[in-house]
Length: 145
Figure 1 (spheres, rainbow, N blue to C red):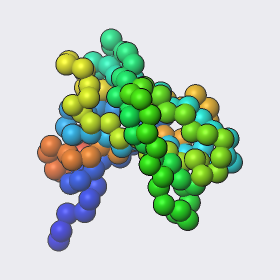
Figure 2: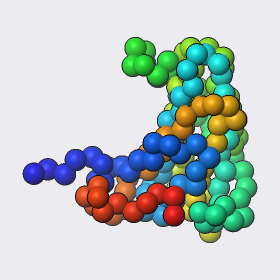
Figure 3: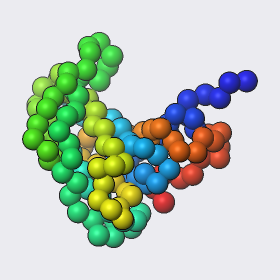
């Protein structure tokens, strides 16, 4: 039987708003955010040395992100900005969903945890990708430790 994608290509934390995500075993993380109703939201990226948030500081590496309605009815729209640690989704249905990718190489030396926090009621899912060690899903390590 072929191994499925979970555990081979990615690991997931569906409720990752303001949760520290460990990048020690992955090359990067994709944060998928959603806030319905065209309300707009601001998402803030921070890095830390451990899951307790030690040494937490802004990670100003976001130069590109993507948006869409989030219901699969439209393609992603690429958006660019000067390097920052925030993404601001406009109050428009076409920006209900936001995808932000962070490469592990963007973190400062000694840092291996990142979090993306919604300042509103946006939901955030974290997908660590390009796993360094592939495992069956039941053997994946917890992402927030």
